[in-house]
Length: 103
Image 1 (spheres, rainbow, N blue to C red):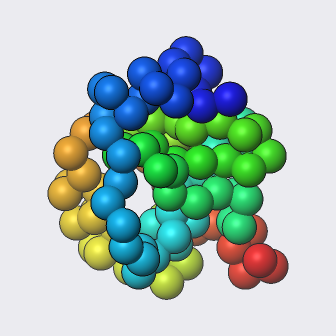
Image 2 (cartoon, one colour):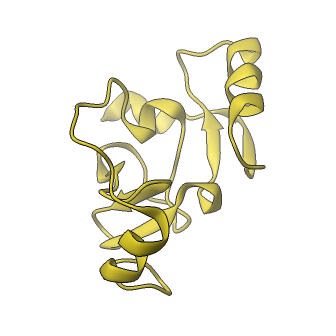
């Protein structure tokens, strides 16, 4: 399933596909989590712009719909700067995500 409300073709038409390349950081390293609670290696960048793919859900979610927790390697100031640079207003869950230490 591409998204809860759109097909792959609709996502490609509306958002476009990501260009070829290798991401330096995975979504979990930025603190992104699944709206249903999946974290860590269960998420990756989607093939569609502005989306994150969740393996367990098998769904592409718009990144602005995904909760963000402060990664353990970021200071509060770095995290605040990161959130301020996002092109959307995100739902931020305050605190450090300790679940990444076990992945």
